[in-house]
Length: 80
Image (cartoon, rainbow, N blue to C red; front, side, top):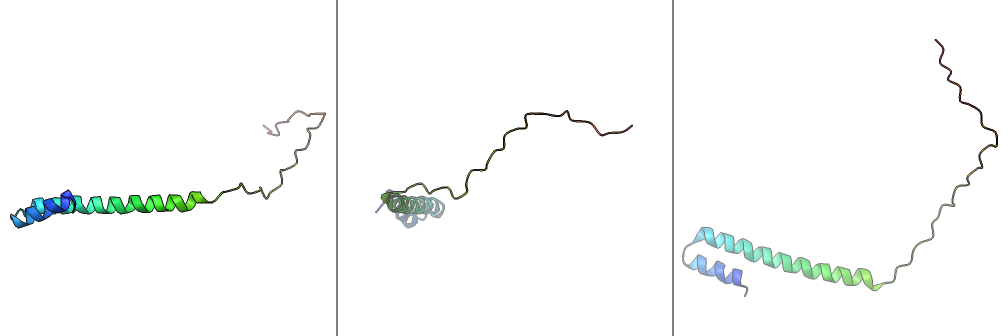
């Protein structure tokens, strides 16, 4: 039995309801935290046991055309 659970029971038996409520929250927080940590470790073991290989990229690289040897100036077509 955890320290928080013992505190919860002690406070209930002495009639300290508000303090018992806080002790209950602390006990519940510890229990949920422990369960989450155990699940996290279990999941990490499952995920990282297999060997992962990078997948081949499915799209080919685009072709880049060479620039024209002759460049022409850009003309502003705005008319006044």
